[in-house]
Length: 193
Image 1 (cartoon, rainbow, N blue to C red):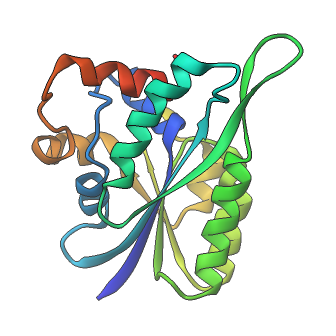
Image 2: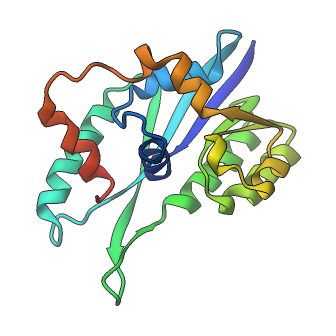
């Protein structure tokens, strides 16, 4: 049975879901199982995001922490965090997220932890890391919505997974029913919106 690791660019996926009018509260275990499919074994999901500095963004950091706590309870998911900084112009930026995700993809390929990497991002900066994973003899599948398929990413990936089809086909499992409306802002705050 082919082994799969899923690498999720968290904020990128969040904004892609929003842009495509999908729910943003996701069961990442079910999401990863849907991406892997019935005939492959999900080894692990790596979820990447950035943390607000509690000294500068205390309200956002507190709300964001409850979202990250829920991810810590997700089976077979490793949470990988960078940080959010504010540049001189006052814009917020993620730091350390893309590099960590790219490094993990290549590292775990070299360690033979998986046969196929499923990469969930629209960020073209991951093309070189995806190419290195292929050079190590692994398969790379890119999971994106149809409205965001760049030529470079399509050329680099072995296969494209249509996220619209995945989330529509497994919506009952991927999008858990809201337990209370107070949970919704957690996801919003996690991405600095």
